[in-house]
Length: 448
Ligand code: ADP
Ligand code: MG
Image (cartoon, rainbow, N blue to C red):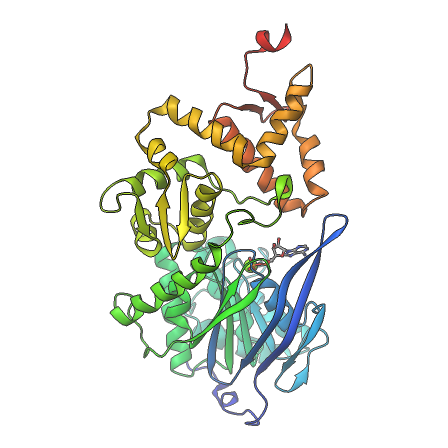
């Protein structure tokens, strides 16, 4: 990798103003027709030069919202953001953003894609080319200047995205889950390369603010972690990571910190049995969790070494699940009363143990019973269908109903999740071709 020309920017701060200051930021989104969703509640953040700060929280906790607010792409409902002492009131100068997947233009080469941002700034052609080549070289894509995006792997495309962000010489680099669309090994290589560049001071930036839902990633990369709670997003902990770089995932101090953060995140998830997921009754938003995942988790929990109770970090390792996925699955089991979350542990209930030991048919019957008892939307759909002579309805009918209660995307996920669970439990049938939902009773029985 060549040497990037603009190292001087680091350390050039006026020494007084923080690089980023977020104070008393609150944000509401309109939810459905009538209500507002409080996504960020009184968030404060001060970031100084030479820091990597991670915003860590589960999906839906408002991390991306905060990043958009810091970038100036969206004003907060109330509160204030300053970058380098300047109040942010629109798309802010000196920032660049890297997203989970980078929208590269397929008809442009790597170099042309990287130069785009400079063209917008009116930088002359020869300087554009020089800076783009330096950024491409820096990020490890030397030799691919003339390649087209389709010729690149996912990891290389993400490098182009990073080069495109760096080429504009931002003071602050904002990254929203930049590694989460990559496979495990590619993600780790890119993290290490980024960290090397940062530690060697070869990137022309003064700070990195990144969003992640991955605890280990936050501990690996950042100097400070702000842990978000969900519903509403609130900073529940600020953790300084004092481990020297390069960090080692198996180092006991690293593990202890990961465990501590796990416990804090689950402690907040545990208190209410109801209302784990946003909304109540049929308005409760549910995440996508498959019945295979649920059954697998119950089985693993029931077996040694766990014998019915497991520490979440250990369980995550065992079942090879990401934190977010595991939380969703664990909370779903809690909603269905097959398990309970407490103090960072997941424990099977009596019904959970029975499920683990049961054969296929008995499992389905048990699941059906818990589904219609504890998931109001499942009971609601069943009830509506029972009232109809045809015992069928279009999925659109329920989709429309839910969209009045939650954002379109959540309505779709929630409905599909519940229908999938109900299909497994043989409570409902669903025809993907016609979009008709029906009761799982033979047509003859239903007709006459
Ligand atoms: P995260 O990045 O932590 O996953 P987000 O900031 O994307 O969280 O979203 C926080 C919450 O706000 C979620 O419940 C999401 O459904 C909701 N949300 C996000 N963007 C919008 C929007 N444009 N309109 C309405 N609700 C939104
Ligand atoms: Mg997000």
